[in-house]
Each structure stands twice: as C-alpha cells, then as structure tokens.
Length: 213
Length: 176
Image 1: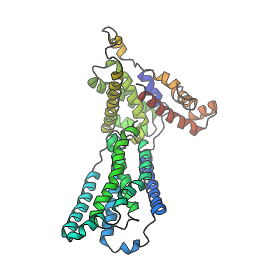
Image 2: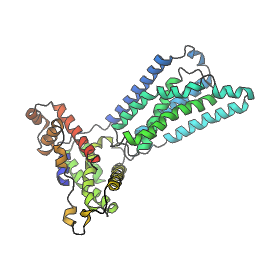
Image 3: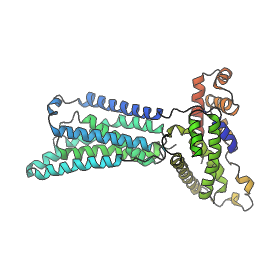
Image 4: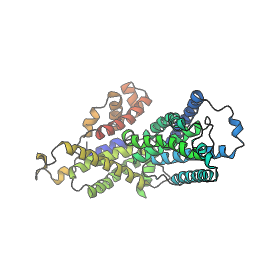
C-alpha cells in the first residue's frame, strides 16, 4: 500500500473525536480505584473505630493532607505523562514540597523528643505491617491506572509507570490512613514513604513492558 | 499554524481537512526521518506509514488547547526510538551484511515505496475488523451502507474500524 493510499484510508469517513473523553475516563478510573482501595481497607482491615477522636489533632490532618496532596500530584503527573509531548509540570514540585515539609516536621519531632521516645516515634506499634499493607491496598488503583494509561499514549514509559505507581501508592496510603493508628510525622514519612515507593518501583519496572503501543 | 488548523478541523469531523493534514504531515514526517535515518533509506517509507497510523490511532490524546508540534514530535521520536530498538534486536540475530545490501539493489525510485505492504497485514485481520475497514475506509461506503451489507450493527462497525487500525499498528510493532 502506498502512503497516499494509507492517507486516504485513514481520512475517509473519519469522524469527530471527543477529545475531552480521555480526561473523563482517566478520572473515572481514578475514582473507581480509590473506591476499591477504600473498600479493601474497610473489609480487610476495617476503619478505625476511634477515628473521630483524632479529628481535633493537627497531626492527623497533616497526615491526611500529605496523602491527598501526593495523590493529586501523582494523578496529574500520570495523566500528563499519558499524552505525547506534555510534561508533568509542577506536580513534581508539589511532591517534593510535601515530602520536604513532612520530613522537616519529622526531623523537628525527633530532635525535640526525649531520647527514649525516639524509637516509638519512628516505629510506632505497626511499622512491621504498614508499608506492605499500603502497597497491597494500592493494588486495585495501580491496575486501574495502568488500564487507563493503556488508553492514552505515553511516550516515556518508565516515567508514566512511575507516576501511575506513585499515584496508586499515595491513594493506597490515603485509604490505609483511615485504619492506621499512627500519627507521628517520623512514622508517616518513613513507613508511608516506603509503602508508596513499592508501587512506584513496580510502575517503573512494568511501564516499559505493559504500556508500549 | 496551518497544519494545526487542518488537524483541529479533522478532530471536529472534517474529513477533507483531515486528508490535507495527513498528506502534508507525511511530507514533514518523511523529511524528519530522512534527516535522522539517512543510512536506512529503505525503511523510511515504512516508518512514515507507521507514524501516520500511530498519529491517527492516538489523535484522541491531543489537547487542542496545546500546540501541535510537541505532540507530533513526541510521537515521532517515540516511534523512531522503538523502531531502532527493534532493529538492533533483529540485527543481533541476523548478519547485518547479508546479500540484500549489494550496491545496485537500491535506487531512488524504490526508496519511495514502502517495503511492508499494509494491505497484506490488513488481510490478516479478522472479518469483524477487516470488513468495516474495507467498506468504510477503502470503498468509502457509509456506516449505514456497511451495516446493511455486512449485517453488523453500526456501533460494531465503528468499533471494528477503531480496533482494526489499532491491531494493524500492533502487527507492525511485532513484525520484526
């Protein structure tokens, strides 16, 4: 087939394309994944019964804002990386700022605490299960985001996989935070960070394999 | 930019504008590839076709509020890198200095033809994808006429065209 023939083939009967559809579909995948992560947390681990007791505590809200901010920035970056020629923009700065702020808070907490309290602030009671549970809870989000990414056209596959994994991990962390009793900043930075980095690395690894087009 | 106007028209359903766009685009793509693949003149037309198909299949990922050039460029670069990677993998398996590299095998006229025949790949698609493409896109029938002819529903025909063209791109990708 000559190139001219291919051009007519592609153009003949070409109908209008709904360009806004892809954003809607991506948001839908994101919401479905979030709902699944929340459902998984609720049915597997259960939301903490004394959750409302944390509401007056600033530390609880720091943790929630941290997770929500990372989720939003990750999702925006993933969507942008799904379209050829778009750069992730400022979402990287948002992630860096949130992580720095949380790390700074953690450092201040550790420095000002008594020496014998530091291990508790860092390890809490649930450090052994926290990261792996975040990674597990984020699985449905990761699946959903990769499926949504397949409908787009990422040209930097490792980055697209990383951003999808990061967004999935952050949403998983957000869902898990409703079960998790820990509030200390050192704990959150270390174990939540580790939990989020598991799906992120998974995304880096799977991106080039699954997202080719 | 003129090309962007034509492409926006195409996205809005103006097939004539879209035809102009693809035609002009293919010259740009050919020049882009000739600059980068001067040592592989025989592969250029294949890649032009692969790129046209990719751009068509991914046109829903274009945001009309953004400039066109970075979008096309990112796709072209992605497919070029992918092509070179496939090629180096294939070359590792075969002798790169085989018989077909003889001095007089090439001429300018041949360089303008694609080596891969898309029509042959098209023939390998299943009926539910091949027939909609042949009737609506090669013979130029409407969706309704094709539906009457094949007994498929209108939506099945649209899906068939869409998936068929994607499957065609996948066949090209896995060829080497």
